[in-house]
Image (cartoon, rainbow, N blue to C red; front, side, top):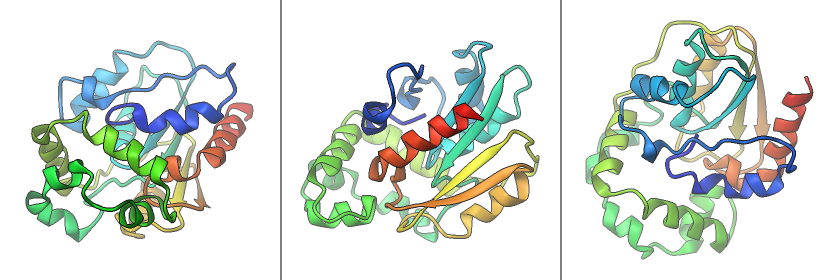
Length: 216
């Protein structure tokens, strides 16, 4: 699951062609409320066995998908995800100059380490900016507001899960994983090299992880 779908391109290029994939683009959904988004996504899925890969904010939606009884979910991979407000900085989301960020005026050498923990990854930064341009400011503001007001859920889930921590995540608190260890009865915590956008930072790692989960 991804806001525009574009950010999963690096991973899709690494996965073998025989693996069936479906990228859920959050921008295509009617609602901006996570529980309603989960219901809407569920209506798009069939009864086949599913492995869900959810990065960042999408992890909260994947959690609510796991509570829906009709889905045949084999495993959930949470990539640098969070189930509550991930950082005190989100309180200032209304002050974030979205047009300035979207414009590309911020140099690549600043965005690349912050987002991907890489020096001078122009290709990934351009992918990120091109993805942003597909979302209008109103939707971005609304999504940031949802993130800032996330309330920690309480219902445990028994579906097997893997949580992937980014080695250099500057956007999400290290304590975010604690909620997953409390609520996910069957969870494996692993660490991968990269920034908050860990799937894009390290697509080969996730390609191997997905194939390993399929083989279980």
